[in-house]
Image (cartoon, rainbow, N blue to C red; front, side):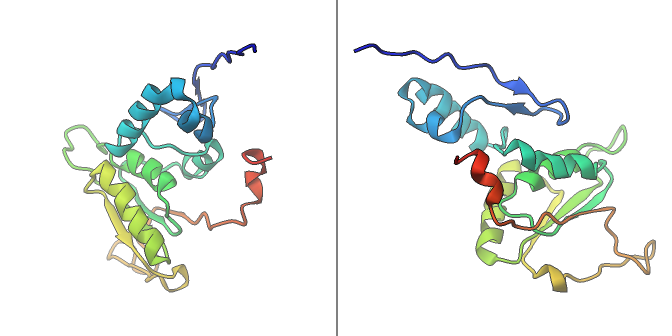
Length: 175
């Protein structure tokens, strides 16, 4: 009986997303391969404390294209489970100008399903930011929030509406 050893490629930097890397391993391999137990434990610990958010590479594209800035008010209409929301929050949570202590931008994360919204609360709690507000409302009935500065429009600088899909794209993960 010959035992084959597989060499694991190092994580690759994703060019279009700051601070993002892609592993050459799928989630199932990380869980089941006993030689990766320490790495799996480390990854879980980093995820739990909010230092790492695991996300499909293709899911990182909408927040990058949206390009929010630290002072922006962002609405994420279909926010659960929260990976894109985390990515948006990372950007608006930065100081808008030198001397700012608290973030001036924020993310309103909405999901119409209360169970998914609860999961979103759990995910956002890991990040521990004052710049997040979570709501549970059907997007069709989401209120138009106005201000003196924007009396005829909503107050949001950016809106992300990445609606749940059929899952056809999962063929890459599950051939």
